[in-house]
Length: 360
Ligand SMILES: [Zn+2]
Ligand SMILES: [Zn+2]
Ligand SMILES: [Zn+2]
Image (cartoon, rainbow, N blue to C red; front, side, top):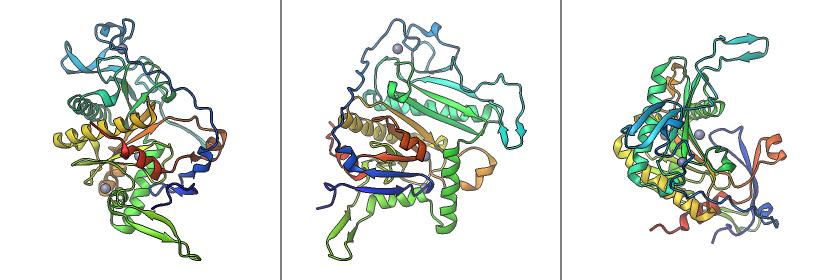
């Protein structure tokens, strides 16, 4: 028996980025709370006025690429109509005292994930997800190659209004940036420090721990069992090449990370064999999430080694991963003001519930 039914209140430090922490306070989750109705899922297959639906290709900005072909596409990439970063900026980097500005150079593309309007990731076939992740890889590669000023290419997805999706039709986005985003920078530098001390990748260590860790913590006074860690307590899904885990210090209650089981720093080096397995692990993880929280609205994003010389020595210390962050609550003033995320379900309990979902 573990203490999983008891309430937990502790601050958990993110092992990879120790400046990030999470307050796990499950008693708070037991407060009577008026649950918001989840937004009704848009299950329509085709919407006449949707620019991303088939037949409406003329309504989008120019096509960047289509897969497998322009006429019969299953994944289509277009330029973003409202780019966050663009290549029209003339100014050079400005430095004035403590105020430093970097030219907002970059590229912003939209990946239309699927021709069907309201289809969710878990409903796409594994073959389709194999194709979609192939498009992610190709766009990342192409955008790094297109301009040497590009420091990072971020692939992400917003699904549902709570996750910031402004167009209902399922899509992902790619932003090529002139800077390495701070959270990727922190992950790369902190994991490097760990590597220099321990000669091992911290992500690999965390996977090893998630797969094999077993320990019991006893109360010093009474000798009673205070907490028991089980084998695979944080594992949600395991494939041949990938594992989906619930991070020990999860910022979001239902957050899941998918990582390659073998050490890999760069997503673009993924083999076809690995990509088939990724499609399966992603589909299964999203199916579990959807079964537990129903109509999941989420963001996911890829963190991979930046392609610039500054980090070329970090290939053995950084490990690429996909972070899936379901949006089940709106951050409060406390969370934004303190930077301390509050989780009202313990990651162990969340993992147990996700694992318990029976897949067909
Ligand atoms: Zn549509
Ligand atoms: Zn690793
Ligand atoms: Zn990350």
